[in-house]
Image (cartoon, rainbow, N blue to C red; front, side, top):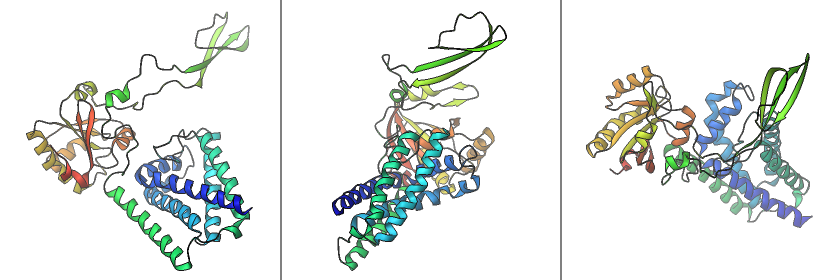
Length: 364
């Protein structure tokens, strides 16, 4: 039993640290996922949405800290009970998401590893079983160091987690797992290869035949039926190839300028998913930066999901000499975890990307 408990202790501790660190690397991204869970369509807890970032930081820090506590044997009773409570909650959440098909990606491992809700639920069930072994074998969990040493390691781990969370919020994630990271070419990430796998779909056509509704299942072909068409439903049996970037666009009411700007030799994109909630200190830094970029021969544009009125107000308030184009809010939040953030492209390839706090680090 002691060996089994030790093995479970190592596996659970390491997995909690890994999963927590991936989210701790990008707490803002995890807060976006929590907002999705809190929405009317999922848990119907919209009053929690304004606190999503605070909750995000607390949850991921606690997740990493619990993994550390378990591995070093700090306060076993508190640690195991906390692990059990956390995994029961997340097991319920992933089951709810999977069964009701509410959230497509659980966010358990951030953008590093994508799991479907059912895969995440399976993972949580396995973790629950391992934690139950720890619960019933709690007497075998012994500290790795003496009391002072264990306390010091636990405290240092807690402080390090808080510092790291603050650091990535004030700058950008230390490790970028998204499709817009430095070195990625946006056109390539949007393209679909000619030999890409096609989705397998099932089409269910309903016809009224002699006063009775009948269903005809095909792979998409319209059935040859002597009856009145009622409706059709489609179901994806097996998904096909999906490019990493789906909804990126640079638009105005006059048209789509995506291809034009992605072909620019030198392009600076000022990204504001919301101009209404943009950081004033950041916007104040934008003007000086963009003037330098333009003097160096760069084309400068803004991207925002805000309306025309907000765009004109931002230009007037901060004396900006470039135009804002329309892009989806979720896409902009994915591109850069800052409001505003700056992305530099050369023919569609990301060469630089910074939080507004680090605008002075840009090289033109």
